[in-house]
Length: 325
Picture 1 (cartoon, rainbow, N blue to C red):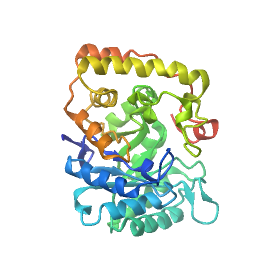
Picture 2: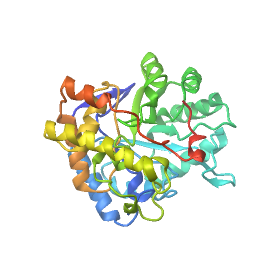
Picture 3: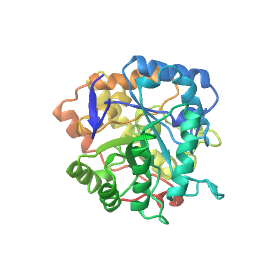
Picture 4: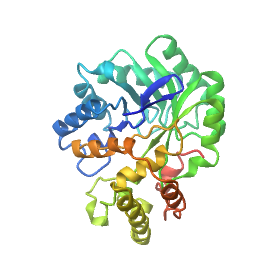
């Protein structure tokens, strides 16, 4: 496994997103033992960046990682997120990044994760009711106290990134970025490179679509957030299958899997990018981490980069309102 720097944090070039172990996807929370084995195997393969959030469950994903990392905490750069639970009363899925809520959130995450510090603490979504300067200042205080090592943002736009960074250095921005979600390229990525901020792409495999294993809308169980997602519905779904087939064609040429090719393309976009493909299976983490050793040809990269945009939005209308671009 190769390693890169997200500002001052050294991390594995491919990380592990833990959300699906407990939240959001078909089968989440049904086999914690396999999820723990997956985390252990990831560490054996050199993965150091592991990502969670208090909202995943809520709370249960952080608790799962605490069990998986018992006795192994010093092997990982542990990232979690705040701001999608209003602890003062409104509860889950209500953005709140006020300084008081940040304080409450960090204490809860530290306890659930069984650690005395969080390596990378992200604001999960920009809070329209709290100036980003106040949030950045609150996280800066946590850094000074040793409870947090580094500050991150998730799905923040260029202006928010600049304003936050002016108060406290931003180490990484987490955004959806993959072959079929490339919105960060136009405005966000140039700002990150100007300010020496790393990019951590989530859903680098298109929520499973780019692996080529998603072929039917009926595959999604009740509670899977892809049910009803515009890209996974109706005619959009059928059109996007053609994109998956194109990735598979390049994979056959490269002697790799579709997932590995999708990740290799992402890694080729720069050495300041550390994707966090999510999985709850040992076999998948082995497959994903092997992408670190795949070098695509210039022709293959060009072919993939030239694929048409995916059909449909990445989120429902409610979800889109929480994103900045």
